[in-house]
Amino acid sequence: QVQLVESGGGLVQAGGSLRLSCVASGITFSFNDMGWYRQAPGKQRELVASITSGGTTKYGDSVKGRATISRDGAKNTVHLQMDNLTPEDTGVYYCKSTRVYLPQYDYWGQGTQVTVSS
Image (cartoon, rainbow, N blue to C red):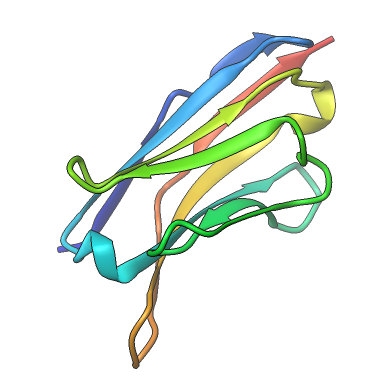
């Protein structure tokens, strides 16, 4: 059974930082690209950051320079460090895994709420 379990969300003041973690089980972690997405109320889910199985990273335009994604293969964990948070960063943050070989398959975590107060 595949599980992606996010943690680290909560209430943060503007200008603050947070570190989200996602622990994966039931997948071969090294054969999966990993990503963080977020969804604000009334908005579409958007990419925050992604990291390939080989370590190549990609960031959404709204978080470039403020976010760092990393992965720990020994712990089947992907982290998202975000700094200088603004209220626009508020939303539910989801972890996603994408199998790198065919057939590709995506798994999603249940999400963790991040609220940034002004």
